[in-house]
Length: 336
Image (cartoon, rainbow, N blue to C red; front, side, top):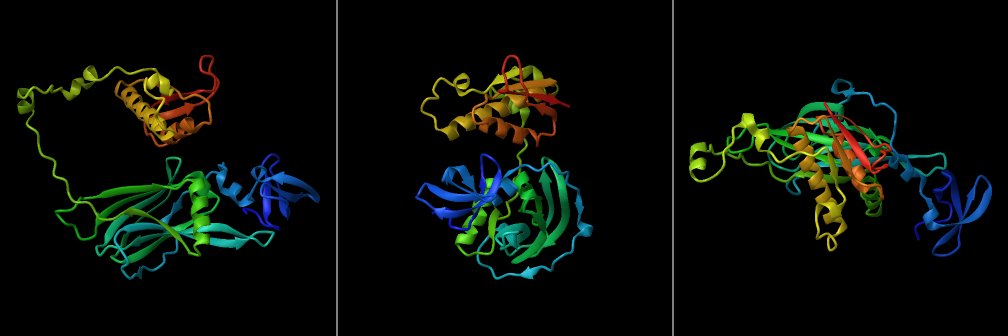
């Protein structure tokens, strides 16, 4: 059963905290809130610590500079596989009820490859860097990056890395950029899974092997023209682009006639691909604004689009407010 007697809970309807005092059946428990006992269904309550990081924080974050961070020494590791990993170590503390809650996460970079790397690291919130450093990690080593408070992890942080070989190799790429974005619910599940397995930390693989260099062959444009391909002058590229739209309707029945047999994942993928297409066309045609109709529904498509827009450098602002034609089902984008 999900709950046990004595567990601290949150009443979803009133946002009040209480505790479980009796297990009534598989669907109901007796809870006590502010001295009052009453029955509640399982889906009417939740653990309070999930709320701590599932809600967005409005507190302005201050930039942290590497000079203010106490460095930990690189520790040699025994090779147990290949790859470079981002490792998360939850640090627990006691709350007022003497229950274990996650206070912060210690972030490590783990290198299980033989070769060493120079790297630049940024912790990004809503498109802005909150923490940045440049360092080096040796082969079969780990590197402590910094701590992130548990509450801040609920804001969807993005961990960005730009790697290069410490000892350059002409056959290898000059640089390798990777990132990892950890969402609130994913973090909650990872911590719960780690506790069940009685493990201290969990990790995410950034890459397995450092990529090889890709030589770009120079193309003879005259030969392409002789072969029947259309070759355009870059200065006149907009003349040959598909027409842009000022309003894009992403309802799936507007995008394809054969949507009935698509899965929810396939529908969302098609909608996001079309959004990216018309976003890029709006940029190429230097439009001032673009209206994207995503509908209301459960807000999944809207949230995905808003997350993408937060990272787009061309976006000045965007707003999802009541529109006389689309209600609350559209977002208007303003470009720089």
